[in-house]
Length: 367
Image 1: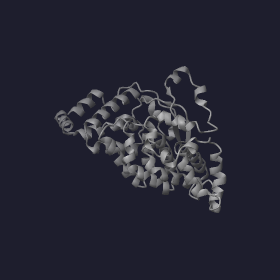
Image 2: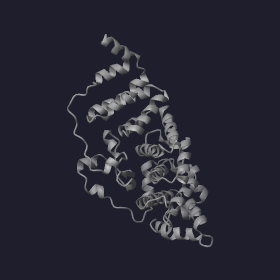
Image 3: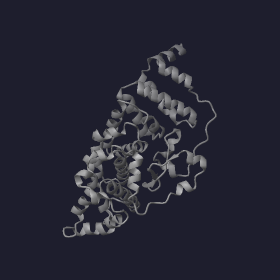
Image 4: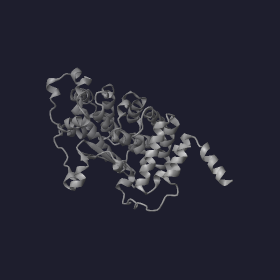
C-alpha cells in the first residue's frame, strides 16, 4: 500500500517540480555527486522552456546563497537567458533583494556566458545605470561599478549609447573623494576609490576624447565650483597623472572614437591589453611568481577582477589582476562570497553514500 502511494506521488510530480526538488541536493560535500546533480538540473532546465524553472532556481540562490547555482545559470540557453535577465531585473527593483540581485549579475558578468552581449538591449542595463546614479548602498554600488567596468571591456561597441551615463556615474562616485557623504563609511570609501580608479582607466583607454571633453565641462578652471575644484585636485588630477597620452587625442575626432566598427575585430582580451597599455604604473603581478607549473597551466591571460566581501566589516574590495582561472568545475571558487577570504576550510569530500541515489533521481525526472 505504502509503495503504491509513493509511486503515485512520483508519477504525479511535474517536470518543473522534479528539477526544483533537486536543488537542495546540490549542497552535498561530495563534489562529484554535486556535479552530476548540476548536470541533471541543467538538462532539465534547458529541456523545459517555462520561465518558472529558471525563476525557481534564482529564488533558491537568493535564499540559500548556493554558489553552485551560478554554474547552472551560466549554462542556461535560450530562452532562459531572457528569463534570467527578467528575474534579476525584478529583484533589483525590490530594495530587500537589490544587493543580492546585483551580486548575482556581477557573478554572471564575471563568468561571461555566451549570451551576455544581450544585456545591452535589455532593460536591466538601464536599471543598473539608474541605481549607480542614485543608490546609496555601498556594497550595491561596488558590485554595480565592477559590472559596469567589466561590460565596458566585454561589449565596448554596444556600450556607446550609455557612455554619457557612465561619465555621470564616474563623476558622482569621484565627488565622494572630495567630501565623503555621511552614508558611506570609511572602509567603503576606500573600496569605492579603487573602483573609481578602475572605471577611469577603462573610460580613458576606450573613449579618451569624449571622456576628457566631459571632464572639462565639469572641472574647467574658470567655471568650476569650490567642491568640484577640491574633487579635481584630490581625485581627478592624480588619476590623470597615471595614464599615458592617448593617440586618439592627436589623430581622431569625437565622432571617429564612437564608431562601433572600432571594436569589431577586437576580442575581450585585446580590449583589456589595449586598456592596460595606457596605465603608467601598471600593478605588479604577485600571483604568477608564486604559482606552480601545474597551476600556471590552468591560467589564461585575460584581465579579470576578484571581488571579496568581508563579512566582519560588511565591505567589498575590487582587486584587478592579469590572470584568471579558466571556466571549469573549480570555477565556483571564483564567485564573490564572504567565505572566499574567511578562514573556513572546505569540508572533506564525503565518502558516505547519499540517501538519494542518482538512479532514483533520474527515474523521478523521467516520470
